[in-house]
Length: 177
Image (tube, rainbow, N blue to C red; front, side):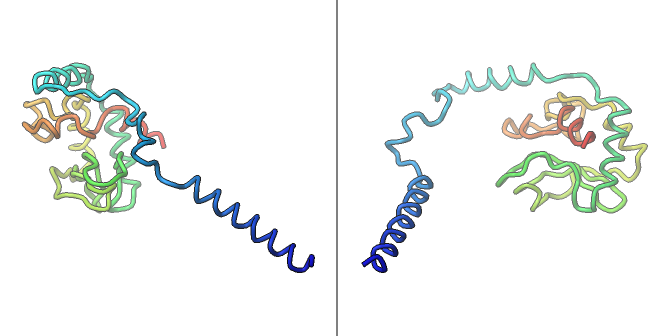
């Protein structure tokens, strides 16, 4: 009798454990998503969206990165394996702009799919002096795409402006690692 009961009890315990695991992994149904998304949704007009866009632009720093940061960035990039570099977003689709080492040069490129796909070079630097001279004068504002006087980064595309662009904070984190 115990020879039959013990395996059945063990089977029941295993079934309960597997059921608990599957229950915890289940997706939330539409009824469970009452609190989703965790922020208030708004139905903003075009004018309101433009106001918010300009507000974000006005918060960007105009302080130049400086020669030291630019030099440290170049030297850190040159330690990266060719085809890699400063890619600060790793997710599906558009990931912003990144700096990729391509042999003895550094290229600014549009990054897709966390670096698995990169666009054609926007610009390329062939030596440290040119790279440092260029990035020393950049700021969060100029890298965001808002500054018409900086054609490498400038864009008329509202969606692309300040969308996953290089910033002082991103560069600082990359250099210190």
